[in-house]
Image (cartoon, rainbow, N blue to C red; front, side):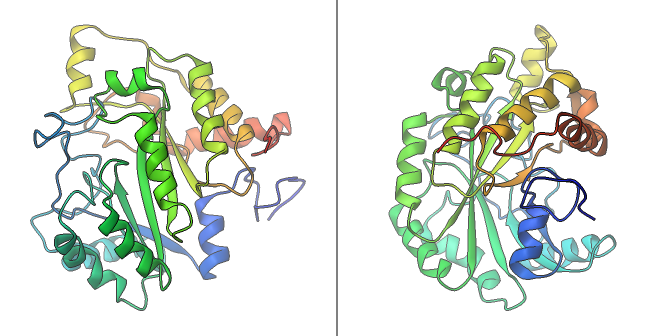
Length: 314
């Protein structure tokens, strides 16, 4: 129950625009993502731009909780729904999560996406990709479908700062990202952008500037993550040879709250605490307790009587 909460896009104590709030008010029931592995790779892995992926990226291509690519996608979806049904009842959302899910010819993308687009009980699909991997043909195809079913594109920006992009081997610039946003604007496709907090070379001001920049863009949602050092990533090798200092929980909470204050209240917050497979998480260990992270954010925002968009300026 919502009590003494000044934030309008909330039915409870949350002072930010949660993904759950959006889904319930859009589809009038509980909905949840089912992570899939569509068998894609990435230009940062196959040699087009580099090998090994972005330095923080796990061996699973950030799809650590997706089903196995050894199974066909419909089987993955069924198994994922069955697993999620142990916790929730509601609508299942296919989430193409692992690697870069538009990095293939359009014919191959249609084979992957169309079975789910035709499903009447699927309210939307979510596709994780890169800003440099959306061809005009792919955008046109998704735009046509966006008139019939909600389409979400998730772009892994991580930081607006090109120096950070170079250090994590992202492989494209912030200018290329902005071009992609321009191409998607007005198509009816929903856009979610990922930011990572805690790169050891970035200051708090760097991270706030990334959030402030997104606040001015025609996007619909953001995901905020703490940097994870995961086994199997290039960053894990860097950390092993020369350990670096990462944010602690209190520092992370402080930055996230200030970022939320900068974002428009209508912008959906799909995530405030990224998940890394616990068996692969090297540091920071505190991120493994997701409930504690979210509860600390909620409690601190209430204590300060602040909310998403409090400092937002159009």
